[in-house]
Length: 136
Image 1 (cartoon, rainbow, N blue to C red):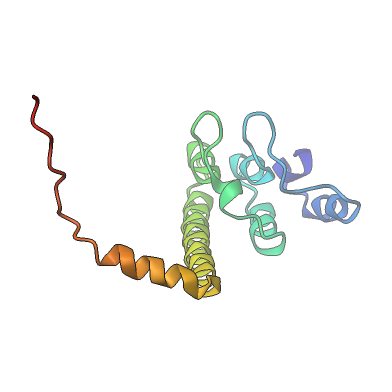
Image 2: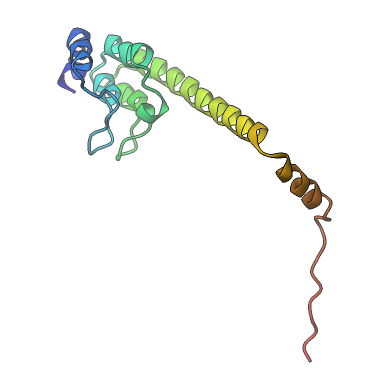
């Protein structure tokens, strides 16, 4: 996190090359993206997002509710904050698209046996109310 906060991309690259996991979060829920953002280190942020592929998980709020974009804004790095907000929206859209594609793939992989059950369920009237027994 020190290298991220200081914008030392060369050290970050080296740390990743020797096995450091850049995807870990600390106990506060900070990713290396949070650390670089709060110090205005756009070059490091770009490396983490574009080269390392840090995504939506790393752009989420920490335990105090602060996203990397918010942390950058709070420290006066408004250009970086806007860039991070755009990246976060793109990551959210990507994650939603992957969910849709995964669901569609899952539906395509289902056996035909399930299709019969779906047809049977679809033929049951939706607005049918149960008749209640009258008390004796």
